[in-house]
Length: 188
Image (cartoon, rainbow, N blue to C red; front, top):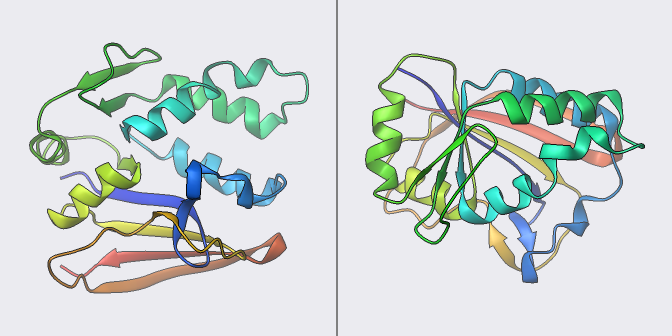
């Protein structure tokens, strides 16, 4: 069975985007943190995206390695992003590309099917999609990358849940600028 991992950058008050889908709070490039994200994504067997995150990622990463100011890590990330199989869950998008396929039906049924298969970890992104997977009890690991900023509202990392989810802390790491990564596994 494949592991389902939900990892995102978020504010200290728990938002992945401020009001108006603003992610400018994440600040200037942090090369050490970016290197961690690269390694995290390289370990992925498949990425699962909701519509909003898909639109954000697909508007930048397909050609990011061609930018003159791209760092070696950004070049590697862009290439890995293109090569990694992706599933996009949306009922409003007509077409996806860049090694992706579109699922307009029930995301929980598809995620359950994907988890039961063989391969590397599944990485899920997008608050709405991840929220549905949280409520269904499908997420095995949460990676919280907290930036030292408070925005007071926006899109929360955690969805409203019907029941408690008990977690075990398996890793913490601090990056320059006061960014703290915490990795938790769900208790079986």
